Image (cartoon, rainbow, N blue to C red; front, side, top):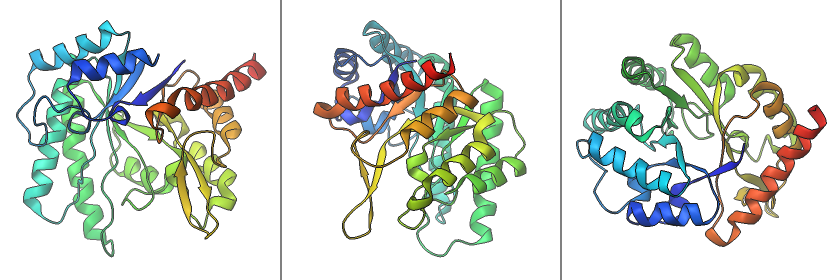
Length: 278
């Protein structure tokens, strides 16, 4: 399975132009966040999408040999401003309803960063929002992918496991990015963090992300291009092969001139593990 890419890493532009650029780099699938990737139309408010527009976007990517593996949504689902939260939910539901026209099986999101002291009320509101989104996903036969990410209310494998226990729907899947589980304080124990994530979430993984992390000279954690940090990719690829062989991986954190080298790094690690298991 080849490595895909976040479409908006190429910049924001008309979708025909973006599809061409992705295909020219040899990527065969993308994670697509409409309002971060396209400037043809304003997708920052709900209501712009139609089956015809979604079909045309998907068609342009298919012409370049590129599928849309994940529709992404960078929105806040427990925002304390109810109007903002309501709009975010409606934007996400619009993606769910149109996912089949993009031929995208997964609509995925991080749930929103914590901006102060988190409370049980925040968790309650987030759960209610996700229950509404899950109900919509079940109606349309779409997988709702949730990505745990540090500094978000669902920031650990354990917190995502808790939410999936509280919302027992088979339409919830996990988008796993080990890099997003790392902090300056736990990076030295990264192997245990990665193993715990797979132990708790591995059988629910539907897609994965690939970035790299490292600790800088001042002790801060930094995000870097895959292959230029210290994340244990051998362990990551080994556990992926054990739990979810052939799951699609979406590359992050690379500029256009760095993409092919980073893609090769991820794929070579995966090939080594695949060969060891055969």
